[in-house]
Amino acid sequence: MCPMSDKISSDDRFGYPEGMVKLNGSAGEVLKRVDGKKSAGDIVNELKAAFPDVPNIEGDVMAMLELAHGKDWIERKTAS
Image 1 (cartoon, rainbow, N blue to C red):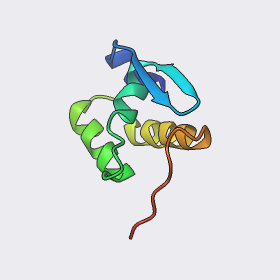
Image 2 (image 1 turned 120 degrees about the vertical axis):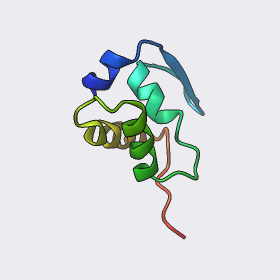
Image 3 (image 1 turned 30 degrees about the vertical axis):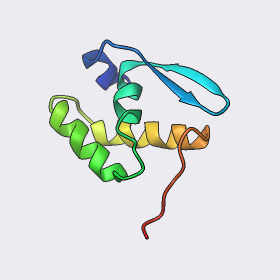
């Protein structure tokens, strides 16, 4: 997830039931867009628009979402 973090310098904090995690800027940019309404594709498209010069942003975003899901920070929502 390095390429995007080169473009973003702020740190974010992410709270979840078991505690708090300090995120690098790119992880924060991804997770702050997770609102239970947007799809992973929506998040990718927002970040592509915000950071058009970042290569492989889709792979970076999907990797961050998978990591967050694996750590139970977010839940995968199925289409209804």
